[in-house]
Image 1 (cartoon, rainbow, N blue to C red):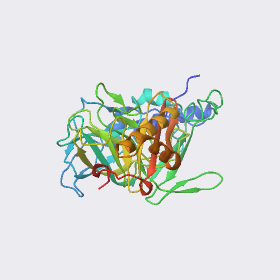
Image 2: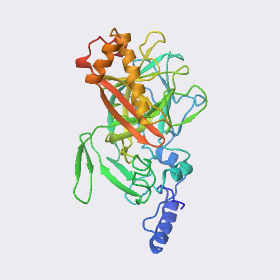
Image 3: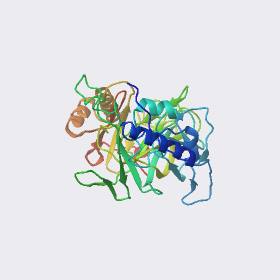
Image 4: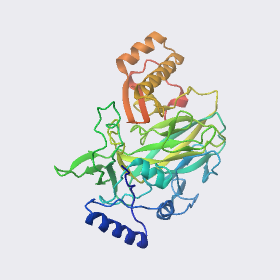
Length: 382
């Protein structure tokens, strides 16, 4: 059975058309309307690119030019210097389409078909002096969640999420689409439910981050160790640094898909999705002078770990690959392989980012307070 796509209206004419469709749907007994919107309207909502270089803290792109691809052929929207602090404004994963609980996502496939993708990012940003093969150390200085609207959304999408694809043991596609609008502040996220409001700590993080792929363009919804992508690892928050290898000069970094709150596994395939104002700093480690190998490292004041995101491969392989990479890091820093395995078996932690077909990600870490080896200077957040 065909499922309608999701969106919302953004112009008076499209609002009128939406009301007509909504009235028709209600009269026919189909319930709430699922409204079409064009990609042109998304860009109109988000504004045109504008880049200033005198704003505090360093440079600030107030308007957003949303993109749905990581691509080496997209010209950078700006260039930043190593160690420069700069601000990036992002839209939510749908480009700001979901404004009310009447805005429903009928199916992921239809939404992607309509918009041309999902998980809008801002960028690409070139890092001055970075060369292909160098490591970009991307530090998240601050995330201001939903600074303009003070709200986000969470949704159930038929046929989508971690509880659908499990050898017949999932919940299937029978559940109807549902959207909940969540008030968001720097301190708190409120999930309004009929049984009562659930108050959660606000823990915003970057869900999608990537550099330009080695070869052809890739959708921002996709994943690969080559360029990263849709990680949905909640530890990519303020105070953390992710180490990712540049495939091209400048790196061409993009970020977006910020979440205000997310449980491990993101079982709905959707967390509390928000727009955000993100403050970043990027440093550069020359190739050959880093401990980063195949997979990105994620470090903060309390932990060091490895992120593994492999599109089309299962969660178990992501977790195992991250363990292998972390074990190899410990041996390079002076532990024997046997001791590293024993230490990981006693002390490691595993977080699951997303786990819905075909997207899987995991973060395997250890506490820095228990580390039996010393981290090199380039791995210590500044």
